[in-house]
Image (cartoon, rainbow, N blue to C red; front, side, top):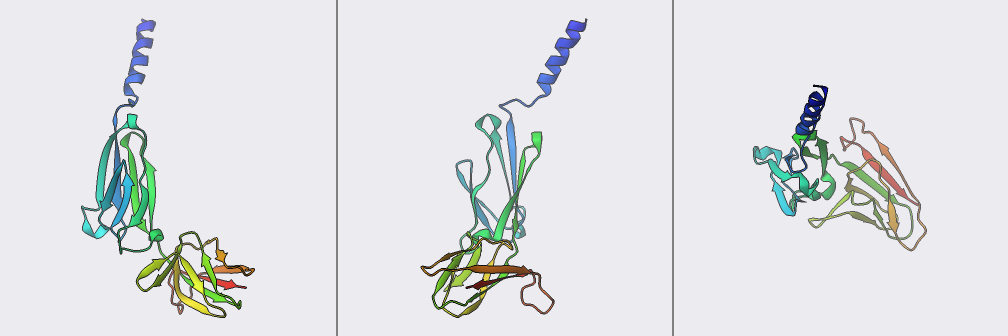
Length: 193
């Protein structure tokens, strides 16, 4: 009797475990204000913005034997905004599958002062948004002794690099706005010296 109970217990435990060949659901919800595109499971996927419900949700059911997948090359659709203006949150729901949610990222004002007698181009990964003639650049070129207050940045902890032959030091600080300031989210102030 104990042997039958033991065998039944083993069969029950193995039977309740998820098989390698069960389908896994991948639920993708775009809660951002932008239409987005990304690559997923060898397919280019486009999901409408949150204002286009229910077109802002995509569900994929993929056999678990093929592996685990994540969206790659996430970006806003052409003309919808800066590369870093959206981000992806993911939740592993175990047997219920995976949920990926896309949300807007707030930008911060970027104020840059060049105190040097040479032109300096700064970058911060791909986090800078510099609009020039309807083109979005991820760097900012600052002429000698000039201050620029028209750019944005999508991080408050940037790692700046400079492109110039001249020796450069970049000091920066992030400040939370007061009611009278133009950026409601904060400002990253940069001094190139």
